Length: 419
Image (cartoon, rainbow, N blue to C red; front, side):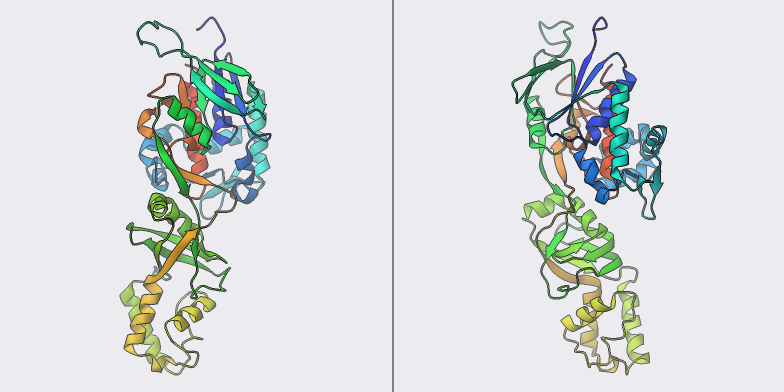
């Protein structure tokens, strides 16, 4: 093998595919690295990510804390993040003349606020490293032509793969890296090469909710709410946004990620509980309501909200439990006070479907993580086969975590694939 050029092929022209190809070509300058993308345009998902700004990573530099943002894959990534984590991502882009900035919520973007900065950086780095980029010719099949070292009759034969294109052309390589994201073809090729695929289902999505309590309140947001899926015993906190179709915002997106399989199994029809004021416990809220009833007894309930919440939301919640516009705090019965308290801290809403999260699409599911060596990202089932990115059964919550797992797994694969 040392007497000839090592041929390495990466299938998938997204973030993980590019980063692994670049790392590989920079680490093994004598190798011939080819990157294949079925579409005409590479890095399409990077271009639209973060509303066109590219949320490249998250300012969380402690691996033990970082892994808590991955509903699936956190345990496998724990060791991986000790080798390449967000600090390394920031340094890598800085070394390629791209500076990242940190926003108040920890998300990191290029200072240009333009995803084209990241796209152009990756393309330029790949070209400078000598990566051959092929676009517009889809792969239709992947085969392993030789058996692994140690198998009877094979001696020291190197693993070889054959890739067949839609055009009929064939390409052979010594090492193969699949970075095909959630594309069903990638799952099929991994399965053909001996892997188990955890069924892919959507993650990171909004909730369709049709309820008169939030009807016509699109655009109203709460800075900190707690949302709970009682059937799954899952809850998340954070900003909550009311939309034309239901509920969105980081709290909902995080809950959808952790509850992805639960929600899928219930066809996205289940109840969600909302605590609009999680910064208070129920007893403190009760005492505050009683205090308002005593001190502001002559004021109208609908126009005197004693809590930090949007006025329109307060008006809608009070009216939903039967408090009319003319009712004063003095007229609030204990029974009605209990109903108001329940509505504020445990309002029940019915999810009737799944919405989209902008133009981005994240799935949970993919290649079973036990079948991959996370020190090298090499398959435990097929020697010479490597994985990076979302083809693996890894997904993170919103905030740059999915990109970080792509950079990390791609870097590990790129470092190891030429050995």
